[in-house]
Image (cartoon, rainbow, N blue to C red; front, side, top):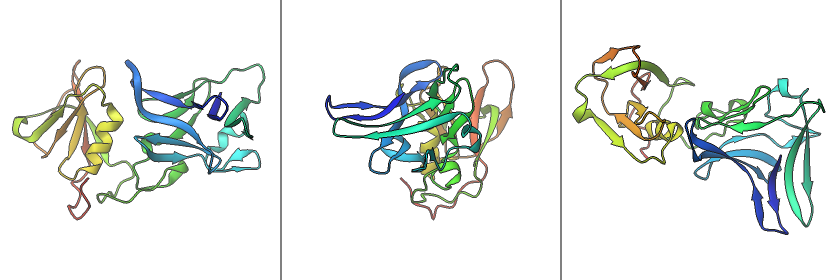
Length: 227
């Protein structure tokens, strides 16, 4: 696999996620090579969420230690092309990297390489990129997942019905807007967003067809900047 730029043909080699697990349109995350920093980056809508770290010797500094025995990495830079590539050390084994709709970069035959779903702009764990904070978040994973529904939520919920929105879009919007306290995807295929502005009475239900609702553990201070 190549990730980089062909100067001769004006091509860019990158890897883009699906919109959702069941919807193969181009999704929000893209894995590409940053030629200036000589590292891999994962972006969403132009914002860098994760960096592999610059190659030090033959290995990017932010990749998990468990992957060191699996891959050799190569960077090439000349007048024709600049790219980053990897080779499985086990020549008889084929590695296939996949970027999931939630932002996980993983080898289908091996480990998770990057957990971009854990990158929310507030931490630098595992290569996550810190942004300017928009709201006060205490927990590294600020959402509690519950199955069920809010009671009488008509005046306290907002739907974004666009099929181009996936789970990660809903999560990022909920984090960046201090009016929202919970979210869920709107459609069964994992697209569209629904947001709640108040913590109403919630009825727990594990029956087939119940909605997974992601609730902020505690309502953030409005001293943070709204997007």
